[in-house]
Image (tube, rainbow over all chains, first blue to last red):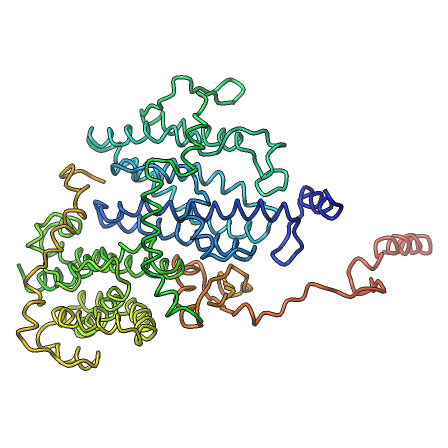
Length: 297
Length: 218
Length: 96
């Protein structure tokens, strides 16, 4: 590592932040851009599973709340893509890499949704897992990213309330509705456990080393379990992992997630990966004329 | 049904269905920034629908969600314009936005001076929000004015747009939009009172979850 | 497409703060889009939209001669005040 890079590393490890116009070490810029791009892609792809339920929302209030939630996610994509653009990659290039499969997005958005129970579980548990990761970015060494995370986390607080409300309405409803929630929790559990990534020790995680994230993968997963397993159990719901338990020292034990499944899914082999990418590609292509003709400044 | 309830349902059904159609663009609009803005328009329309349904529900002794979702497709009073599925076509979508907002302004501004204070009050609120819808639609219409596909979209949807307003309001709409009135025979196919075959699949999708467990709370 | 920087004021009396940026072809689109991205929840009392190219940033400073007197830390008030007080109590022990 050359001296300037070493100084840069020491600076960020000491809590220093950098701005878009500062000199960035090459390795830092590359890792940061890849991370930010994946985050932006995830927000954008995450819209697709939820979008169809906007159309099927069973009350006016739910339709409004779900539309607002998904709108926030598009807004988050916009904020995050702008950060990536200011790091040097145009959004058209990022979209092209996304739909061609060259760039990745988070595992949870490669899975199907089947019922309104999924709508509740996504807003309650999937979003919860994501919020934990997002909070770990609030102190990111790259200041433009840290700043947008504040708006993102603020908006996510509305989503938590919505998710909880949807779930509680179902859990205090008919047996059939309660069953929708249990079935969705059972189905979403494995991807949720894989979501935070495999447990590399923090000191070996480049995202921690460069202070892009303020916590390691396992710390995030433990936070998720600590916060949400009690909420799941107190509603009388079960989690499909007989090994799941909280030790006396506060650490949660669980069955080893399937890391092969995670790798396979994020490289585009998830149940809905290809058709969601195809859907997005179709609209990108169909609207190219709008961007070309009308929006060229 | 009272004339008032009937009028409220006409407005509410238009706003619900056009809001439903506009919400189809969530996540797939031409740019991210436009996506966020367009979604606000869809939410406003659903919000207007809800307020209108609530007024009607008070008159009819039911609730807003029951009116919005529990009627048969043939009972909806929406105009054919709002039923059309335009998802793959941004030019058509903007043409509809533009024409619908012009038509809506004609009828809403008439209601602002209604002797019915609840109706007048709600119409005024709706009108204030729709200032921004009109600005958005006009901005896009101006940008697309030179595009043949936009001009032909407006031409194609114009007879439908006239079906949104009452017959005595058509002249005013034609003046605002700057297009001539087509013949009556051309208008008949697109007027309120008939439904396109696009309404039923829309309604099926819109009510799928609600119908899956009738009477349930969600 | 141009980048517009967005500044938001949370409420009157507060300063405008940089909130992010949007891409738009011109000011009219920037207005329509920024008001939704930065105001749909009523979180801002006002927004400023500024094309990025209009912003003149200064990040380089000339301070070769160490003009500490211009900064708060260029004065050692504490030590001198302590000394002055000690002198005053020696000169007039019952005063004050």
